[in-house]
Image (cartoon, rainbow, N blue to C red; front, side, top):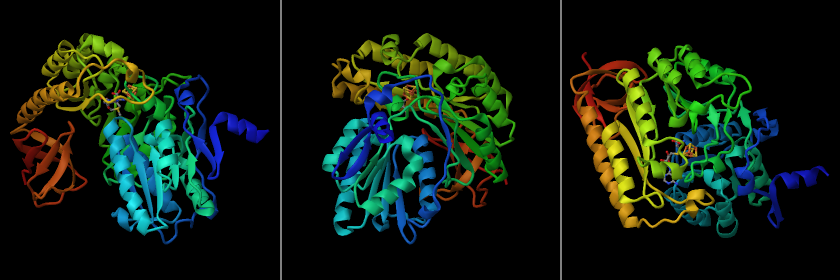
Length: 490
Ligand code: SAM
Ligand code: SF4
């Protein structure tokens, strides 16, 4: 009886390879008011020596969320005895943490899988795993089942905490293991983490997304919008302060929707204030959706010196017609109003954005609205993309009469405008002194050290003295499009 219920909840297949829980788009689309289940991460003692004497390599694609998931994955692998190596050819286990936001992210992951196939022909015992957003896609998992049989295990974004068990299942049965829950998602607390940076840390505050922008696959791959409990977040930040961390980035697909799923009133503004009061030297947050950005939030950012004056505010397009087709819930005018309010209230704020060109049906006039908006906003940074149709999203069914040539031409023209302003804004800083968190020695062949300003600009510092991990004053001596040069008044 229990087993029947289990089979009904998940899209389960039983074949020669055992039981597989496969992704299911119909289920992934569902949003109910069901309370989110909060669970504590725990593993059985007998798993702790599973990887003893073995090595691992994790390849991460995509956004900061994925980078942070990989920090949990690495810590779980080390908890069960594996040791990290920096060359995948030397590893006993290779895991791909994938991204599905655009087609090229897919192609990169499949390209790497191709290389791993050859490696496995020489190293029969190599264990290969795939996880992350691509694992949540029906089409991808189908392809792996049929064309990439050498992949040992696949797990979805909701199954991260199950990794040690999936490795054990694969090792003990020698069968391909696929476990992808398509449910709206729970919250797992207490997962171990191996942080990649000793001074800057990512802290998840909200998972999933309920916005369903018509081009975007994230609501399907990451599940329902669900906020972590504020006490768990604050405890994590307080521990980071004790460990000497200088900066925390509060992460979510839509951070300013934080708390909207609680049955009591505690919002992103409240959380930002409480995190600022832990006295961590730098607080950042990303990504903000313009629709949820309140006046109160702007006031809080302006009020606390340790909340960095740097806001990522994706606009996606400048044409109201396209914004409506995208389901973005704002107009060019209301976006500009918010943009100007942020600029006028937070001293020296830097604003960055994301822009998509070549959305289905985008006309030259629509595109010119985007160019006009880029001219008006003079962004400090912008991530620009050609629209990529994603399986099962509404926009993938829209008629698209814009040729690839036109899309590439628009991307090129847009980049010329945004790059012009990156340089112009950077030049305004020459001669000024800025606060920089020094991260380490330059790795680009130059002497000296590098770090990031409070406005999140990369700066190369001409010094022989090691200030790594410290926030120091640096005088800007030169400006490039994507970075600054500076020196210390010693
Ligand atoms: N949640 C954030 C927001 O709404 O602004 C963004 C999350 S997404 C990981 C990062 C960016 O990828 C988006 O802002 C958008 O510009 C871009 N993106 C998402 N779906 C895309 C698609 N189908 N084609 C091209 N770019 C896309
Ligand atoms: Fe995707 Fe961001 Fe829109 Fe959510 S808000 S659907 S993550 S683009």
